[in-house]
Length: 232
Ligand code: CA
Image (cartoon, rainbow, N blue to C red; front, top):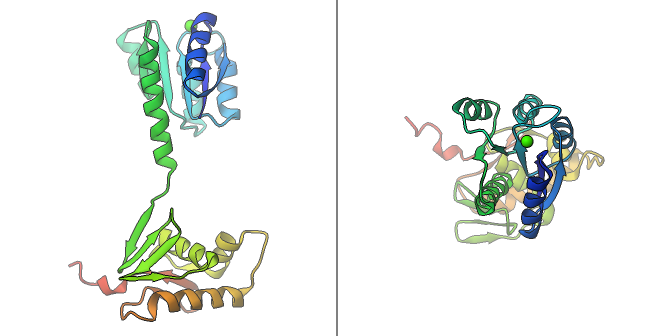
């Protein structure tokens, strides 16, 4: 976890840096708004801690600039001012948390921990997916259908994961090749078809409700068609 502190008061910056480093975070410090905006855009931070009154650009302008460039890194805003206008403009600019000075370090740490663990949760993919009695466990790379655990090769599991994540969408062979084999390797149509035939046999052969379908002239799709028309 890497944090950026943008704070012009040297003492306050060092106080935060020391405490957060001791708590296990990698911490960078810059002292002016201009530098802060550049550093936040150049590096991949998990969280920004930004003071409002800064030389160069204000903390609010820094956040506005980042949000305008599509940067959605969570931000804690620090300020000595406790006016309603400041809070509102900070929130408008895309600040996630507003802390008024003087704050206690434990308060900052609590927010930092909360916000960085939220980041971690957001980037984690879905762990399990069930479709038509087929259970896919992404973290353990295992799949089962009904009571039967499926013996899949690594490639077959990769193809199944791709199908599952984009279930209901027709995937062209070129897309499957790129996602499973990588952009620099062309496995050839025949190889893809062979892998899918084997995967399909393992998933569908013993079941009446088929899940992997060929879309003629286009590609393949994973979907549970037994549910079609049953919604209304
Ligand atoms: Ca300041």
